[in-house]
Amino acid sequence: MIRKKLGLIFGGVSSEHEISIRSSYFIYKTIDRTRFEVKPIFIDTNGTWYIPNGFESNFPDPLQLKGSFLSEFTSGNQILQDSDKHLLVKLGLDVVFLGLHGGQGEDGSIQGFLEVIGLPYTGSGVLASALAMDKYRSNLLFEKAGIPVAPFVEVSKKEIDVKRFVLQLPISFPVFIKPTLGGSSVNTGPAKTPEEAILLIEKIFVTEDRVFVQELISGTEVSIGVLEKKTGGQWEPFPLVATEIRPKSEFFDFTAKYTKGGSEEITPAPVSQEIMEKLQAYTLVCHKTLGCRGYSRSDFIIRNGIPYVLETNTLPGMTGTSLIPQQAQALGIQMKDVFNWLLDQSLSL
Image (cartoon, rainbow, N blue to C red; front, side, top):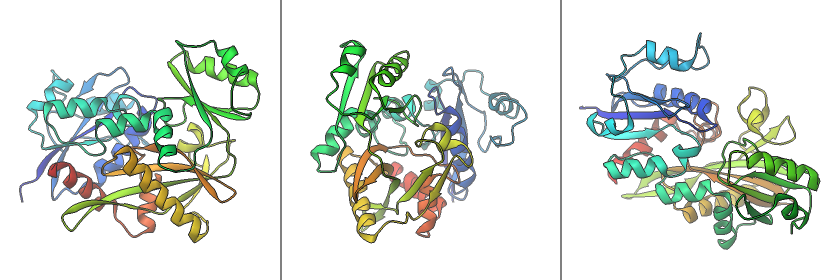
């Protein structure tokens, strides 16, 4: 069998750079080598691309680095001198696996570039990626689709005085605040008073233009994935099982997500069959409403038996212990098969 040539793009300039490296290491090790030969393509935090000359290049284990990942990646591979995103069309790639998270890797930017140059890629397209990254617009769509959503508003740095906005906030405290276009719980958090809200919004405005403010729903935190599998000639989405997340900090922040022992994750979540089925139905609605493709993962808070949707991720974490791999394992699904499904779907478009 002639193997397809696959480019695995990872790293990137977003705050989730390190998580992308860890996810992509797992992807790199898991992809079916009987069908694909893989070229890892690294983007550093400054946006510089590093493309190895050959396939099956050296991918350093990010948990066993002696120096920086960049230094070990470049020293372990022969890097093309003219490495740049515009070189992708000359590499002979059949497909791209997106191992990026957040920012331009998940907001539709890289997806649009790949479509322009004619390279198929894994995951959602431009519109779904952009909508899912935009917390305000995705919540408008979820609300319209009939999924419970906590009251929310958005504030723009260009439109309003922060202090006046907070004092006139139409939502009762406590509230939860995050960048509208942020990811991975960076610069997010609760505000119990107007003073805390003003400080957090002004902090986010240092690097972001829009802030999403939502009533703080306290309850059980869960996350549930969707995969797509070819059935009867069509790619059909199906839900996995939910994972309950018990953060050891006040909420499921960046540290709780990505620090070993930062949270307890229970898969399947110990909820009633009725709640599990409701979560499965809602996550499918989220996936379809945004127009996601291949896979997605939606986060919820359950309060008084009602799951309130928080957001949908179009490129969810893919480390060996990430939530979708946990949920797939609980259903007896191998991640090698999942990656084959994602790549087959991309190649069929």
